[in-house]
Image 1 (cartoon, rainbow, N blue to C red):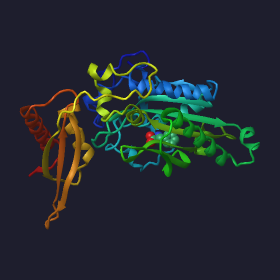
Image 2 (image 1 turned 60 degrees about the horizontal axis):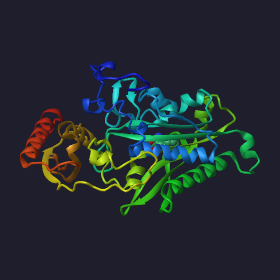
Image 3 (image 1 turned 90 degrees about the vertical axis):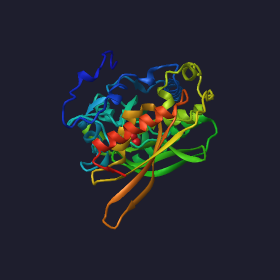
Image 4 (image 1 turned 60 degrees about the vertical axis):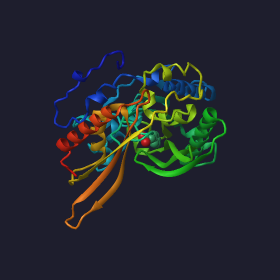
Length: 372
Ligand code: PHE
């Protein structure tokens, strides 16, 4: 259900040749995990709302029901994504038709909300990306976007230039948010690039012996403000990944668990309880299957992963390239290791052999590769 309207896969054009949205993705539209107060994603959203309400006396207007089906203009053009940027490719983004996508970030709503005159807002929603498969990547996840617009009088008094003022305010705001959510946690700022902000930063948090990127942010490109009728203003924006943060806060080891309706998962969380540590209820062993093939020029790992997910659904935990070589004739071979593991039960050999057999057949028939 989106904005009170049920959306089924027949409600959107599906026979468009440019449509690359599989049924497994359509079935996620409207589930809105971020609007469930008892779900880790909803609990986290509410905790972030609390931080902004407490520190900005409820100035931030919240949107969490904007439709994830957006125009390429909103998703890319309005936030200045260059015409040749990889994120526009069919390999990275789900297209419903040539002008319509499943939003790949909540930044898709920035320009419109600015045009409507908003100066402080948070947008939460499901976002969609074609990607590889491992414990922290899933083709549907949730983001929260934050935008704050400043008027000249706000920075003029500080003696700083507008950009410095906005960047400092942004970092202070997000460091405060990180402390509100995590208490003491190791974090670091990394300079980066986004088409829509300059300067741009990423915040990383140390988790399970790795630096985990949890948000992107920066000072909004002046062009976006200008086009939305905010000529003399400056603004900051951030976009944070709710799953990444929730995995750290609740110690949820695998991103697939967020989609589980197993009571042993769902019953562990309650409204307002941020950071209750998840107790794993299963440690079923993974089963590994290797598959080698000669690739063609059109091969991409994202296409392979989509096929594996279409066959094995949430039983696939990871798809990893373990060998890659080119022979004297110039043919390139890839070997992928697929890890199968259920979060809920143990899988039988028979079941896994069946899945792997189906994966091989689908790969052979859809990917233009030669199995070895
Ligand atoms: N849209 C960016 C992403 O999805 C995050 C971001 C939002 C970065 C706003 C800067 C400003 O990765």
